[in-house]
Length: 374
Image (cartoon, rainbow, N blue to C red; front, side, top):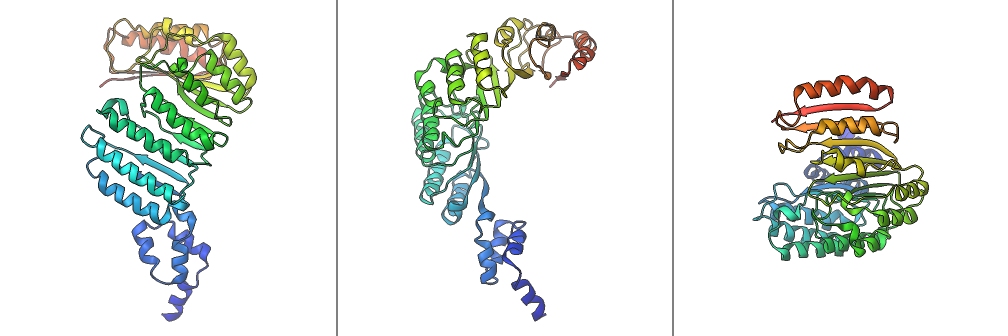
């Protein structure tokens, strides 16, 4: 029995660390009490590189205390951080603000240097009733992100920051991580209905990002001038651009074919994907799909509104007839959600499937037409 115990106690540190990877935190802590070698394995930095924290709901204070304890003990080892704020409401927003403030301050004191930061669906525009709370959050994130020097991936999709606040957060990221950041996901990062492409502060901030390979952004952030900035700052760097076109965002401005052509020359490996949400009329979509843009994927999502004026079947006709021979299209996906019969009938759906499936397949386009009724 003693020899069996000694064999466990004499396991190499590398083996112990691999065993510890399969244990939850509480069991790791118990195992660390066995002997000094097991305690050394418990303190191995690779065990604490990645962490996800839930900080929403009425238990935000409890969640925050746990997160702060982790940050105090292992924050210096943390590299990949994901934070979620599930079930936000007007009543829990202030609690979340206090919790995230304590946590990020603790991480800052531990000199945590993240590689990946993710906090999706903050939805400040929807749930945050008071400007003071929103302004404090902007200040909290800005102060923390300004200390980060090695960020490679940043995702705050659906944060819904006001224009100045969002620019302040991006400016903080670019302060030290502008040359290291490779993936930037800022889809719905700003409030809807904002024409960010006209905001000079936004133009200035995006010049700080010089190493992006993947960018997810809204159409209301793009213009000829913004593409010209990208052509200079991301020359031969950017590989994928995901553009969301949302009905409530300004989307009637046009990006010229010349701007797209110059952008493509600057980034020859660039591939563009469009996601149209609640935008279905072809007279809205067609001008956005410039022939010079290297479009690979197009996704159309109807939204949940029953609107008899949409006539989305004509949109699909227009794309299939006009663009498959003009742009290097590889995917066309259309999803109808909860739409009424007058919007598109089953006969129209059958016609589109039969008429275009083989044609688009021959052109190398993956075509999917899906209807989801609720």
